[in-house]
Length: 233
Image 1: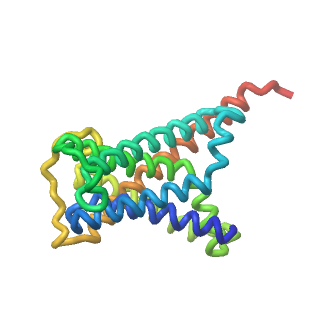
Image 2: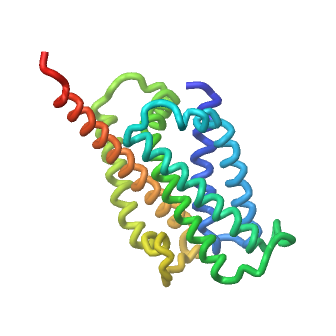
Image 3: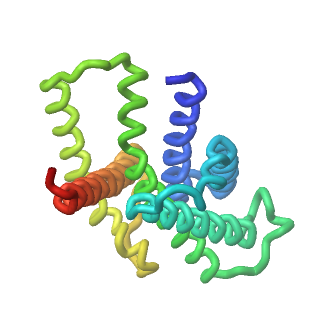
């Protein structure tokens, strides 16, 4: 695995961390929130520059269910990012206050709504690339052979993250926030800052895992249908 790809992987995970930091609005002041947003925008631009060839290949090749799902995911992510970017400029109080308009409460709600959907869609997008991420991690740590004990540990860790992610989804009222439903929850950052990041990171892990294994089931089903429809020799 090239050093450039390792840097790309690091930047992608940094972007996930920045999204969670942006959701932690009451952790810091408004200026910090806007700086996190600018850094996130910069990483999104870098990510698209690295993956610019993908856009030229969208109309080429076979469009199976997995590829169509990936295209829809990226289109949804682009839409959510644009909504978040436009609304951030409208309600900016520090960095782009000269561009800000009197958007009011409604625009702020839409901005937060888009932010939660960006996190969800990025988690799904990560799930579509999970096999590549795991192969990259194996190459990074020089893992070339299969090991039953290591596999069991990794699977147990994945189950633990999924369980914590389910718990965190309810604790953070994540479903309500995705539906733009008013929620009374308010995280106390004086009590625990790490807990906020751990909870949302586990939600990302849960959604990525569900996506990865769902797509694996689709691939297995497609192979089974192909074998069943193949003529007998």
